[in-house]
Image (cartoon, rainbow, N blue to C red; front, side):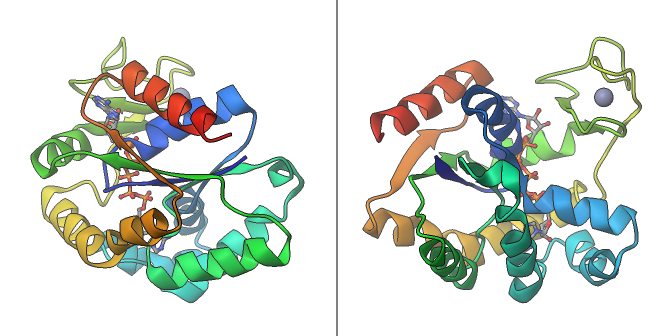
Length: 216
Ligand code: AP5
Ligand code: ZN
């Protein structure tokens, strides 16, 4: 099962991808997570990507396409994957189609998560992430039991560099200009399911599972 999660920053792609990965036993492939790890480790990729990410711009297509090319041929992707945050431009979408075609594969479903801008800003400014295990929290919508501390591993929670309000506004703008056209692209291929992303996490998850299973 090869899935893509599409949606603006803060729509809940990461939150839901973790749940889908567990349910369907296929990996979550997040270009954002891969890039943040590279930035932290100061690799060649990380050094190149950092300034784009911190200003809310997209990292150049050739770099992210290469990341995905290498990631999708790993063994754990053999039975499927959940792409979270890729593709984000028309060029990336076309490259993905070619990549899959060469392997005799195709996408099964593209899930578009829809949320209004003012709620996205609230979600992103309140998001906190565990430094050790990467678990996601929200100071109001999904707070940890002990403030600043991860429920799963007691790790310290931090705020992403790009979750400041000014950067969030640029990310939303970039999404509208460069990523939103993909909705039409996948709609035309009859692959798109749009899910309302402003309810409870459990309800959104069950709507997603229904959309996925309904198409199998
Ligand atoms: P990336 O890491 O992909 O960030 P993003 O797309 O901006 O998405 P987010 O991770 O911010 O949001 P999300 O939808 O996963 O929401 P989440 O589940 O965390 O990319 C970061 C940067 O990397 C980009 O700006 C770019 O520079 C670069 N990059 C990455 N991929 C690239 C690509 N393909 N091409 C070029 N550049 C690329 O939820 C948000 C918060 O809301 C959390 O706190 C959560 O707890 C809360 N929440 C979630 N669901 C609910 C709910 N239903 N109710 C209440 N709260 C909720
Ligand atoms: Zn943790």
